[in-house]
Image 1 (spheres, rainbow, N blue to C red):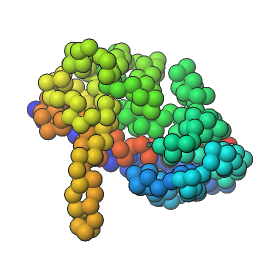
Image 2 (cartoon, rainbow, N blue to C red; image 1 turned 135 degrees about the horizontal axis):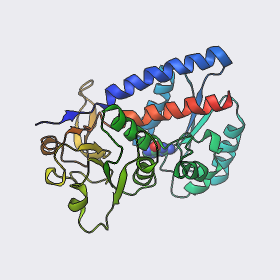
Image 3 (cartoon, rainbow, N blue to C red; image 1 turned 120 degrees about the horizontal axis):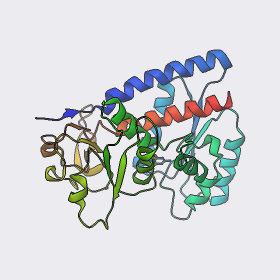
Length: 298
Ligand code: GUN
C-alpha cells in the first residue's frame, strides 16, 4: 500500500495560526510584540534566502523583524560587539546568527556570546544542556519540527524503535535526545547510526520511526525500510537546476531528500516529501521559539 504523505506545509500552516493568535494575545495583555533579529555575515545565496524567509515569516505572524547584514570582512570583535548590543536590546527577544560564518570567524565564540534566553536556535551550550536534562526552553528548530511532524501524523512514539541516521549537533544528536525523554511524544528506544555504523540496513529495518539526516541523496533505499514505518527525511540535496514555476526565466534548485522517495513510499506507512516535509517546519519552530522568548520576558 502506498504511504500516507506527511505534509510539512499543512502542519506548519496549522501551527503558524496557533503562534499568530498567541502573539496577538501577548501584545494585548502585556503590550509585548515578539521580535526576532537575524544577523547575516557575507552574501552566501542559500543563507540570503533563508534569512529573507525568516523575516517574511515574522511579518506574517505579527512579529517584529530586525536584520543586520555585515560584510564578509567583518571582524570577530565587530560581530561580538553587535551581539552584545542585541543582548541588551529590549525589542529583540530572539537572536539568530545565520550559519555558516566566514572561515576567519570563530563560530563557537559567536554562538556562545548570545544570551541563552535569546538563543532561539537552541545552539548555546546552556540550551543544549537544558535539552539533555529534559528542561528544554528552546529546542533546536529542525528537531522540534521533526517531533511535531511525528506527533501530528498520529505515529505512536511510546516504546517505539526510533532509528536516527546522522549524528550532527543540529539534527541527529538533539532529535535522538528528544525522542529518548520520558515525555509524551517521546519515550522511544533510540538508536543513532552514522558513517562508521557497520550494518546500516540492519538497524534501519528495525525502525518503527526512521529519521534520516545523512546529507546524502538516496542514502536510504526501499529495502532498508520496515513495512509500515514512519519515515522522516531531513535531507536537502541540490541535485540540479530547473526553471522556476513562477518565473521561468529564473533557475531554481532541484531538491532531493536522503531517502529514495518513490520506491520508499511503497513500503513506508507514512513519509515526508522533499521539498514540503521537514523544511517548512524549521522556520515555524523558530517563530515558536521567538514567541517563547518574548513570553519569558513577560
Ligand atoms: N544555517 C542553516 N540552518 C541553520 C539554522 O537552523 N540556524 C542558523 N543559525 N543557521 C543555519
